[in-house]
Image (cartoon, rainbow, N blue to C red):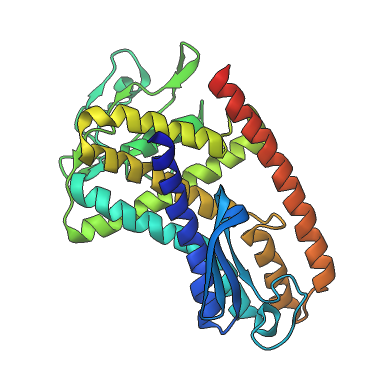
Length: 343
């Protein structure tokens, strides 16, 4: 059951991503030759409206194959025959649809249970926050100029900016105040001495639900970018990165832990994971790496600036090389996932 739930979550996210490419391609008159879920040999397929719809053996990935997207065809209805802005819209649509999915799922969660408000539930004695004058009930508005919408934002700021002195802007009794907190190194980690919880939630009205749902998407985009920054700088090791196998294991564990709380909380936790994954997929696909949507956008933006297209054959070779490197990275990450599960 765990694997089935995980595959359903993956499948929805991938279908939405590819649907973005598909709908914008159709809207711009580009012929979609195949729309598929999965990779490898076809298990089932049918043709409708000139497009082959396929379900493939390997349950990871998917594709929206367009006529001439690799430059081999330039006739009417091909990808290359359309304006550069039409092609940009088609390529960007996949990640954009991922962010839209995250937004819609966030509306469901926040509309039902509210959001984790950045309200302090207490102050630890003898730690910097007490000396800085922070008190129970204070609402944190910003940290070093970064707006704080959720209690998670406070934790994340401390994790991604360890040891930094922080200027807190907070609200108390309807008035705003400022104070400076220098975190204290305690038991190997820097601490402010504030107490709060992601389980302290405030309900929202309709407009607030939309606002905080957008903030939720922004939270996961920012978290993904900050995590990538740590990975590049060496703050996070490659062994700490999870691929499809690791994510399936995480989904399975979350599903098992949620069963005792009832069906509603299983759905909430699965939706939370889906928001994390779809926002992560959107960000990763926008990275300027050959073979990814972001890599293709780089070539298209250069074309828009220059007014001249890069040699399609050269671009195809660069994307192929990028794909091979990504496949190699996927194998390494998958091996690490399996090692972490069984060792």
